[in-house]
Image (cartoon, rainbow, N blue to C red; front, side):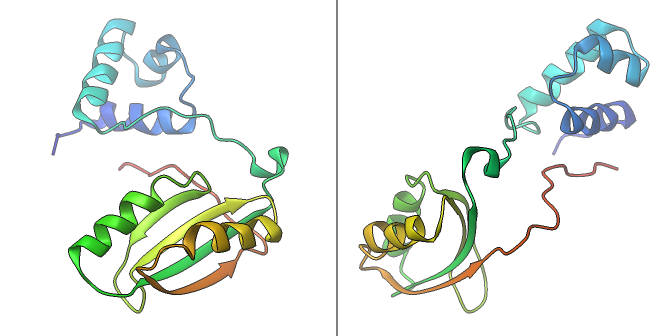
Length: 154
């Protein structure tokens, strides 16, 4: 793990707030000149701390109105079942997050879709086709109270 000093942490917090800030703006905020600021950002990127830069889109503005959290149990706890499921589930564009979890279920999926009809088709045409899945439990988001991507770095 790379050691981050106070300036690195401030840069990371600033970039998480607005990844489109110019190097000049960032340099002013951390009280450095442009070149050292740029070098620090490149070093942080090269270390893998920053995975990528993205644009966050309002789902409703593009007619994505349904968020589903789906808990999945596999029929057997065997390595080949886990590999098959993970390989397949990562190909599905509707699935936004996949977590291998401890507890009553094996995986937690976050799925974003237009509506309930699209979810039904997703389950019938894509998930139910997997013979290695033994159980699904779905929860539907009524209202999202917080949607944060930033990790506060202290």
